[in-house]
Length: 110
Image 1: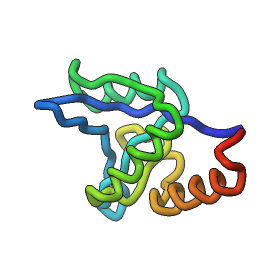
Image 2 (image 1 turned 90 degrees about the vertical axis):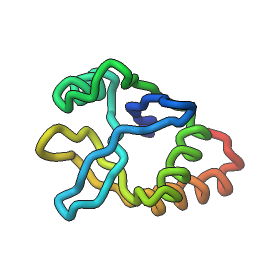
Image 3 (image 1 turned 90 degrees about the horizontal axis):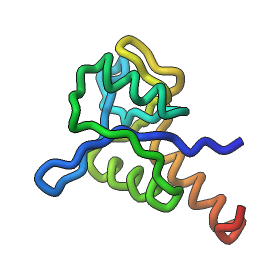
Image 4 (image 1 turned 60 degrees about the vertical axis):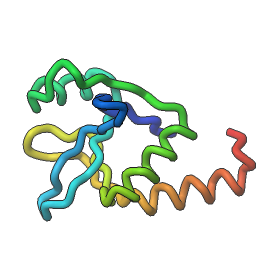
Protein backbone atom coordinates (compact mmCIF):
# COMPACT_ATOMS: atom_id res chain seq x y z
CA UNK A 1 0.00 0.00 0.00
CA UNK A 2 1.34 3.41 -0.97
CA UNK A 3 1.03 6.30 1.41
CA UNK A 4 -0.20 9.56 -0.08
CA UNK A 5 -0.04 11.71 3.02
CA UNK A 6 -2.13 14.62 4.15
CA UNK A 7 -0.31 17.91 4.75
CA UNK A 8 -1.26 20.97 6.76
CA UNK A 9 -0.73 24.33 5.11
CA UNK A 10 -1.67 27.98 5.08
CA UNK A 11 -1.29 30.68 2.48
CA UNK A 12 -0.18 34.11 3.60
CA UNK A 13 0.80 37.01 1.36
CA UNK A 14 0.85 34.65 -1.62
CA UNK A 15 3.30 32.28 0.10
CA UNK A 16 2.44 28.73 1.14
CA UNK A 17 3.69 27.48 4.50
CA UNK A 18 3.50 23.87 5.62
CA UNK A 19 3.20 22.69 9.21
CA UNK A 20 6.45 21.54 10.70
CA UNK A 21 7.60 19.63 13.76
CA UNK A 22 10.96 19.53 15.56
CA UNK A 23 12.87 16.26 15.87
CA UNK A 24 14.61 15.34 19.11
CA UNK A 25 17.84 16.60 17.53
CA UNK A 26 16.16 19.97 16.93
CA UNK A 27 15.83 19.62 13.15
CA UNK A 28 12.79 21.02 11.37
CA UNK A 29 10.64 18.33 9.78
CA UNK A 30 7.60 18.48 7.51
CA UNK A 31 4.55 17.10 9.31
CA UNK A 32 2.76 14.43 7.22
CA UNK A 33 -0.28 12.40 8.23
CA UNK A 34 -1.84 9.07 7.28
CA UNK A 35 -5.35 10.47 7.42
CA UNK A 36 -7.26 13.74 7.56
CA UNK A 37 -8.46 13.19 11.16
CA UNK A 38 -4.89 12.97 12.48
CA UNK A 39 -3.96 16.15 10.61
CA UNK A 40 -6.98 17.98 11.99
CA UNK A 41 -6.14 16.82 15.51
CA UNK A 42 -2.58 18.14 15.06
CA UNK A 43 -3.99 21.56 14.12
CA UNK A 44 -6.02 21.59 17.34
CA UNK A 45 -3.36 20.34 19.76
CA UNK A 46 -0.69 22.55 18.21
CA UNK A 47 -2.93 25.64 18.36
CA UNK A 48 -2.11 26.46 14.73
CA UNK A 49 -5.27 28.49 14.21
CA UNK A 50 -8.04 28.79 11.67
CA UNK A 51 -5.80 29.77 8.74
CA UNK A 52 -4.32 26.26 8.59
CA UNK A 53 -5.98 23.73 6.26
CA UNK A 54 -5.53 20.05 5.42
CA UNK A 55 -4.84 18.78 1.90
CA UNK A 56 -3.90 15.51 0.23
CA UNK A 57 -1.82 16.54 -2.78
CA UNK A 58 -1.50 14.43 -5.92
CA UNK A 59 1.85 12.65 -6.24
CA UNK A 60 3.45 15.14 -8.68
CA UNK A 61 2.53 18.05 -6.38
CA UNK A 62 3.72 16.12 -3.32
CA UNK A 63 7.09 15.53 -4.96
CA UNK A 64 7.35 19.25 -5.79
CA UNK A 65 6.49 20.14 -2.20
CA UNK A 66 9.16 17.76 -0.88
CA UNK A 67 11.76 19.28 -3.23
CA UNK A 68 10.81 22.81 -2.18
CA UNK A 69 11.09 21.85 1.49
CA UNK A 70 14.58 20.44 0.89
CA UNK A 71 15.59 23.66 -0.88
CA UNK A 72 14.26 25.61 2.10
CA UNK A 73 16.47 23.55 4.43
CA UNK A 74 13.83 21.19 5.80
CA UNK A 75 15.49 17.81 5.33
CA UNK A 76 13.09 15.51 7.15
CA UNK A 77 9.42 14.56 7.29
CA UNK A 78 7.67 13.00 10.27
CA UNK A 79 4.65 10.73 10.11
CA UNK A 80 1.69 11.42 12.40
CA UNK A 81 3.41 13.72 14.89
CA UNK A 82 1.70 14.90 18.03
CA UNK A 83 2.92 17.34 20.65
CA UNK A 84 5.50 14.87 22.01
CA UNK A 85 6.47 12.29 19.38
CA UNK A 86 6.16 11.12 15.79
CA UNK A 87 5.71 7.62 14.38
CA UNK A 88 8.52 7.72 11.84
CA UNK A 89 11.18 10.19 10.66
CA UNK A 90 11.97 10.19 6.95
CA UNK A 91 14.90 11.75 5.10
CA UNK A 92 13.19 13.82 2.40
CA UNK A 93 16.10 13.56 -0.06
CA UNK A 94 15.90 9.75 0.15
CA UNK A 95 12.13 9.83 -0.35
CA UNK A 96 12.46 12.06 -3.43
CA UNK A 97 15.26 9.91 -4.88
CA UNK A 98 13.24 6.72 -4.35
CA UNK A 99 10.17 8.28 -5.99
CA UNK A 100 12.19 9.45 -8.98
CA UNK A 101 13.72 6.01 -9.34
CA UNK A 102 10.31 4.35 -9.14
CA UNK A 103 8.84 6.74 -11.73
CA UNK A 104 11.72 6.22 -14.15
CA UNK A 105 11.51 2.42 -13.77
CA UNK A 106 7.74 2.32 -14.18
CA UNK A 107 7.40 5.23 -16.64
CA UNK A 108 5.11 6.88 -14.13
CA UNK A 109 2.52 4.08 -14.46
CA UNK A 110 1.02 2.52 -11.41
